[in-house]
Image (cartoon, rainbow, N blue to C red):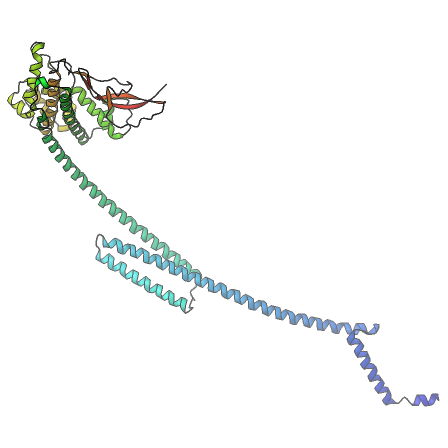
Length: 461
């Protein structure tokens, strides 16, 4: 039995069995269920496959990253090219602006070559802008960014510099034009001033006092005195303006002169300094007004009962005549003597020398003559009206009295009026005080003609 069983296992059966066993063994190895002694043989094979898989995966990732980097580089390149294009556009626009400024500047004053050159440059830059547009439309942005940006910056800075230079030239030209206009206007102003002085000279003649032609001593009243005073101060202010103009022409320091007349005065406006000169003229011309002989100490007068008629007759005699006419007729009259005294008192030798370069007028007045000049004619008109006012003052019964107020006096609306509309605060901390009297005041009986004063603010303590 045993022999038969052994002989029943043939070689072919062994071979089949071996194949079956190998197949089973292969399946187990593939599924990882292998005998312990087969692990060492399977492990290397798995390691090789794993490394191969990682290698393939890395190759795939590297290929993907390389593709993304190329896309980013392309976007950066396009952005830089676009920035370079914009820089060139702005530089070209700056050039157009600079040349347009040159074109405008060349039109006034007219410069044909400058206009043609600027026009050609503008056309050239417009063509350049058109080419840049075509480059953008056709996507031909192949310009090197770094060099293009640098060149565009240089071009733009040059254009800006050219624009500023043109603006500087234009401002310089406008300055010269304005300077010429100022010179012309100054000449025109001087001409108008001469015409005004001529008109004032005509108006300051005796014509305005014609309203007093039918005046009689019995009908004399304060209103007549006020009328003469108003015309007197109008003439006085015209002469003061002439004095100031002559001072300016002689390069006098007007501020220093005003301070010398009325020291330590703070003016609310610079042009108020004219009141100091008006005060000086009134002070000199009205000096000794309260005396019947009025600055003529050697002048003999009749007894008091007859003086009123004498002064009124003097008033009537002179009021309708021009000063020059009267002085020519009566060079030794009381009025002629008054003119000489007041001229020598009012016009200082240094003043006359500065105005006219000599003392010819003063010497002529000293010798008993009268200058044939506009300056003396305007002075004589002032002297005539002050003289008439004095004659009228002593025609009243009792005589009109002159007064003025001292520096620092508190302002009173009864006796004073301000010559300027100074800013006076209404608060309790301020009190208007008199800086100086400009025009004296007068009393005729109970009537008061206010003096004119310049006020300053004085803080109460």
